[in-house]
Image 1 (cartoon, protein in one colour):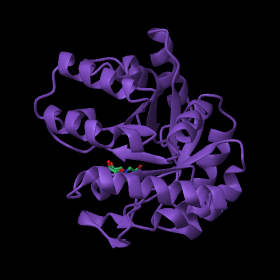
Image 2 (cartoon, rainbow, N blue to C red; image 1 turned 90 degrees about the vertical axis):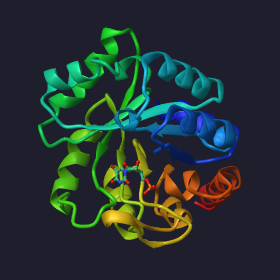
Image 3 (cartoon, rainbow, N blue to C red; image 1 turned 180 degrees about the horizontal axis):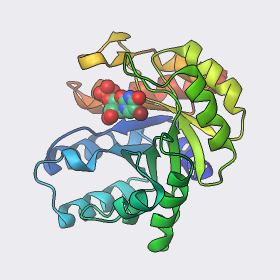
Image 4 (cartoon, helix red, strand yellow; image 1 turned 180 degrees about the vertical axis):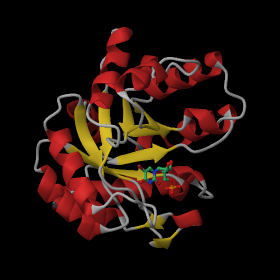
Length: 247
Ligand code: 5BU
């Protein structure tokens, strides 16, 4: 999964994953049409769409694949293994279209086996990103918890990387030290305008995040709320690519 992502990133010269947090199918489709060429992955929250249908979602996923994008459902699974496996199915059938998903390790390592079994059930492969840190203020992922998540995640083939806190480069640097070079770090909480965001979100500088060891900057409102999303996405792509080359 890491290799697939880096191949796309190199083709597009962009380490940007777009957090496509729009609530209508039309809004989502428009966003991909506008910024698809500047981003390497597409992050979704399938359960926040008002007019979701299986057919419109399938068409949207085809559009994403045609735009050379990995599809990442940020579901933050957290239940026991067998339930997580079943949650990969259900009405949204995440296992059939998502290339990667996020999970907490709070319930123990079997959650990763459950998610991998979900993909196996439909003869697909996917990758899990474990939440080692979060970007929101006051979150309960303590340094000790982070250490344990990294320890368990590094030892599991089904985990290709971790979520690190993009709003705090120092935390990211520590995370990179603990992770080593074998797995990826993807980072939400980045914006060209650094500081506090809505409802406890915090933003750090995308170039600093990449310099500190991030392999992918996850950008939401910085792109989808911009007056000119394509122009903004191109900016984030350039900044991320330049920072990667410096690193
Ligand atoms: P923003 O608009 O750039 O703030 O969007 C950030 C996205 O990243 C949003 O979809 C969140 O669900 C997601 N996110 C986050 O902000 N912080 C985290 O720690 C994790 C995910 Br994990």
